[in-house]
Figure 1 (cartoon, rainbow, N blue to C red):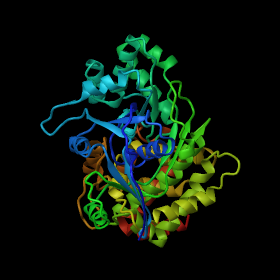
Figure 2: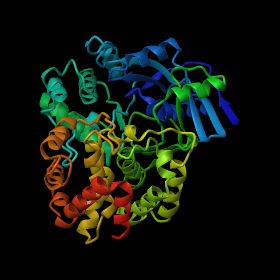
Figure 3: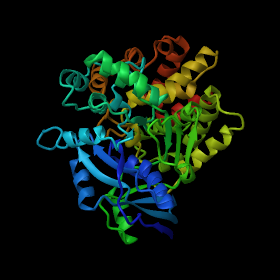
Length: 489
């Protein structure tokens, strides 16, 4: 194996960025770009304080014990590895619920860090559900218990949105300029959607605060791209054979991309030389990635996992699923895009298939399948609606939606039970219990979820019929039968 090793910069620096969502993606993406920047420029003023808002206090403490250093193993394939040590994280904090049920161990330290004058940027990777936005209309779900708690007790926030609002309120009260909020989650118009959520939550507390945020706080959009699977025991053992014993390590593909709208009133790192693309409008790149890469991932997840296929590599190694992805990307996703002149969507589709076939990554389909109710509107449904409104069809999306409905039953075709990890999982279980023996009623119930499926799409009779036909094919003839039926459309 060819291994290239990059040690971390030797000296620690100043915290100017606070990150909410200390997970594998942040450590293998934003932190990598910032480490590259620090090593190239020698500028140590853009260190990161990373906060975990969920239940993994062990990671927070493990990184502290390791001096905030860890490794990212970037695999181009099974024979080519770049091993990168990351040292740009200067601090880790925990504001979630610990094993004993207590909330917010470090919440005051986090709020203090956010309110500090040195903090100029706040980045977020809290997943789509962390913004508590209705997937269909983009409005804040104020009745969600977590959001309702933040409205009732704004000085003791639990959500990322509540933390941002309280921190901005403290900065306003101190006469301090606000930080820039940079969303790095896979949502269309992610900066603007984050802005909507923060302003609407602030308005529940104080209209003048909401107005100040609306006029003073920058929320640039961004597009992030890197495949970062969840770590497995096999991954840790493989690294140990290479001399890396690091319980905080993460693995990723070699490819990495970050496209950001250039709107940072309080300044930013000069990171263009390190691979970050600064643009005036990120929307075309964001939509292309959501519909082609993420949409393809979701197709593989719901079709493959229900058949017992475990990983992206295994799924894309099947000729029938690989052909499905190419058809979906070029026939259904690409025609809905408005890309800058010179963009080669065919080359992009081919590059995605090549990345999916990376045999060194074990990207589990069940990991991708999480939170489908929050992901599918931007990955599939909005694009399908655009095609239907243009008088075209979307049979691949119809098949995907049918596979998702089948997946939410929590049992694969071999009878193996798995957890359906989704904010609406309880509702899905009720649908299957009530309508599981009646495909027509079951599909109708799912399509009627107007907080997930745009009503104009659900009410399109040809599309609804295509979803029902695909569901029947999947449940009666299996994946092969459903794909054969698709070929005839």
